[in-house]
Length: 91
Image (cartoon, rainbow, N blue to C red):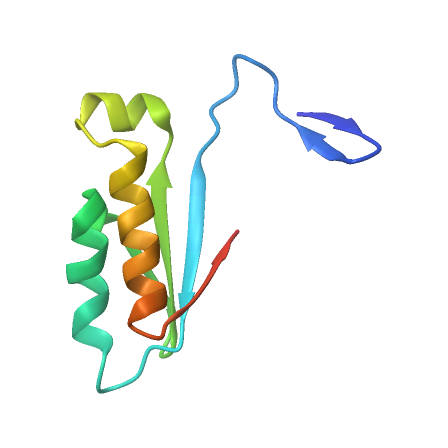
């Protein structure tokens, strides 16, 4: 990583993995997390942080190309999480 005044800037040869954190999970909606993550093919990469929070490794654009996932699939997944009332942030 190259660190500049504005923060870390990845070099061209480093992977730019995206990880998002989903919060607001409870007994009534926990089953929906895997289904929504499946929209972008990320259901297998869900990591449980605690009872109310999960972390999903979305990967990078190279992985998306291999798995035939495009940015609109990821956008639909993120908007589905928001529409279902989950909290979401990029980690």
